Image (cartoon, rainbow, N blue to C red):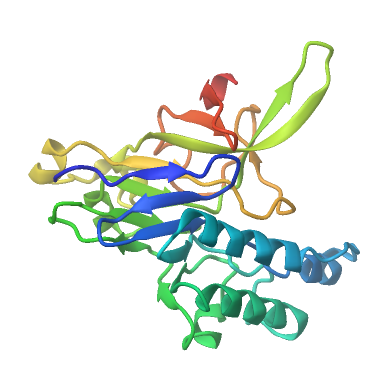
Length: 267
């Protein structure tokens, strides 16, 4: 399959760079633009908007990393349903700020209903089942992307690296005197192909798949720090993606600053 394409986190940021050979893509997940509008509508919670800060942080990352493209791994928007009102305006301003600099690809998430259609002239879209970035079979075999709220296309297993969002992984850390804090985290480990597809363990992956090394699965932290998440090292927490945690029989957790915490179950 050739040399595996590199997917490396940007130190200190909930974002990664993917080397696709022909271009460098900046990948983020779960931007949840309009979250303050959604919280006001859904729960009556009033928060000052951080729309400008989120947009500026994303644009600064594109400039600082010299990326050729932005890929959002789902949930660009927050409210479930076609965007309108203040949320649509926030999305329009954010998309315009990005696409004035680089092309933008959206992998449709469960919060993105109508977003791809509403901004079809401004961004490329990959469906909820996911797709490939880069060309399989060439000198670089490609990166697969999906959001994570539904079963992915089994063809994603042809990639060397599968990048997914939706889960918003976090770790709860305790200090020696009983204090605790919650930090966003990355999860990275070898993917179990049988647990990644809806067909499950009863399916024969085929001779080629059996001979190939399984892809690495990279679960992205949420870009939006207000969107909560799954405390992956706390017993009894339910995962959101249908293939997790089974598709990651072993995985390490990493903080945004690059600190490796080891097996996320034992942090």
